[in-house]
Image 1 (cartoon, rainbow, N blue to C red):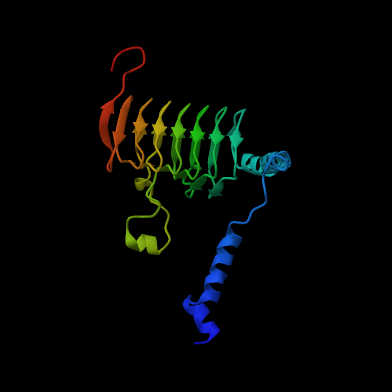
Image 2: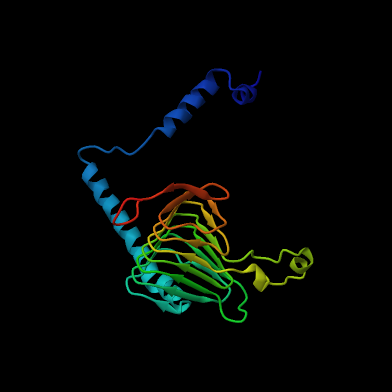
Length: 239
């Protein structure tokens, strides 16, 4: 049997030595001990500082100015990370202290007769990969918490009629209905809020819930379609 066949089959003394050498190579690392630890710790801190500095510069000189140019109004204290993806034309109005974590998406339908409008209230947090699809109006209240992957639609996105979809027609006005999310609402990761829904103040929408109808204030909803599973105590008294 040739040496090449022995190595390919993984048997024989040479193949065994090669395997041991490969495993040993995978465990080799630079020594971190009493002498080298301070140097590596300094390099680590320098690496973090440089990375954070570059990210800050990107936000300050590029992401934020570009995003602000697409907004009708932005309150003080905006904090954002990546540049949101915006498709279509619409009015974006942000209150004070809004935080956009990660990369969000804002999609606007064709304006008819007025530009679609997205409003986000003071102190609201919008998590990574949240998406707003606006044909007329989506309003998010103050001090809300939208976890990652939340989707809010005030329209179907396409006509229900197949012929009109094939023709590339926009969503008919009758298939658009505003969405209103009250103050202090918590929407869990991956939840979907559909057209025409009003979510009451201080309500909680569980992760992955699909909200198709109004949610009362101080209620917890879960499931698909979402239903009330618990009522929370109202401020100032028992619920």
